[in-house]
Image 1: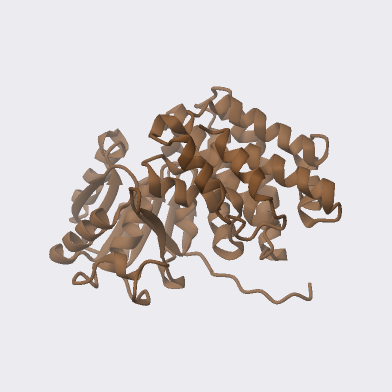
Image 2: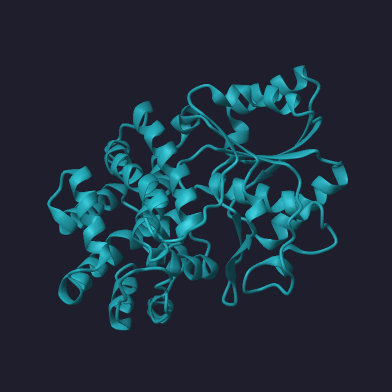
Length: 385
């Protein structure tokens, strides 16, 4: 315990069945009267959405609805932020998957800076330091995936040959309140459950073995990996109404957000960003397709050249929780999960073999404790065509 480390704290958390129903009353108690609600088009058609609106009206809360589809872009964030500023919003509430939450987070910041495009504050793209001030922010995930409800960044993209996926990041962007009601995920279809669940598991694994990991993150990530490996299996076997599994995955996704916010990511996300910037492929699909082959490559490399690498030690602990045979057993379980997920190949989204080969040459190690040879990553990405 001699290592120094610091932790970015999360906002107030309300977790459990029925917690979604408490949100209007919680907002009213905080004195908010004009709410900017950022949500997915899909969720806006549900009974729970209608019930939320009715509860807000009974409490005399004005709700301005911003429905989004697809991942956040510079234009979509700027548009929502401009509306929030014009409407005089008191608070931004994001309800949905990672795209809705990231849009809400970015809009809460940019609503106070409406004369500037969010692009100017993005890492590696912008020319300005991100501001610390924002509107109050409430995050309500409906999927168990990105863990955006617990992170200090929002990912914003421009898609195309010169595209990017970059973060608007500041410690002040962690939501003030998080409400996680696992029953919201019961309406999520298999394809989204699979992609988002594999994204959450990827984040947990990469943060857990990261060179920036610390005892605090390890103590959260390892148990979450344990439950995610089993509960995601149940869901991918078709048990979409398994509320216990939904609850486990909701918790695991939240922990994955805390983990990546404090320990960073590895190869899968190192490639997922550039891939998602080139073509409009769902982030969870990319993570799911890369998870098993890249992890097999990492374990094989460590076993061949670095038998004392921390990755093997930590994967041994995961193997114990998953009741499989060592690090290679962990890889076999990941392969079984991804096979059940049956995610489409990347050519479905417009990728060419040349593009995948070129992207495979990028240095995507990030915080991985094991380095892969370029020919290995080129081969892995080529197999996804």
